[in-house]
Length: 168
Image 1 (tube, rainbow, N blue to C red):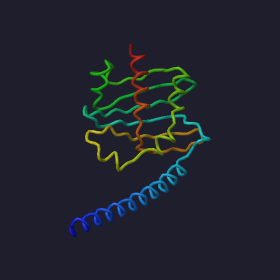
Image 2: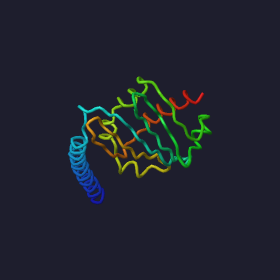
Image 3: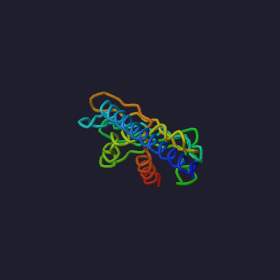
Image 4: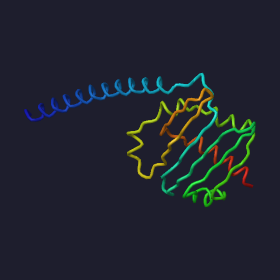
């Protein structure tokens, strides 16, 4: 009976300590997230160019995406040392550059990049086996740039759809 009481007390104490640690870590994470989102917030700025380097995954992709404007025209380009997923899974050429519409360009530029950056958890990402990783550069109208490793999957899906549309 004595052993049973000590076991319950030990378990209760561990649960309390764990709860304190979790609460403390969440507060620190919130503070870090607030600092990160404040340091990269460009809510008043317009993204004018997006470069996304997509690597990893089960298929070993290594694809560089770029959406930009030049001389009043809008472009999507992609290339890489391993665009096999694009050619095999989506029937696309191994690399390409296409002129896109202004609306399609704006759709990519209007993605919520601040949200992607704020929600990115590098520690979590490191624990995913065969994760698709991103290294991106966002260029703004005011000349500033942000380099980020935030998850850009939703943008990459739009880019694949656009590349498929224009390669047909």
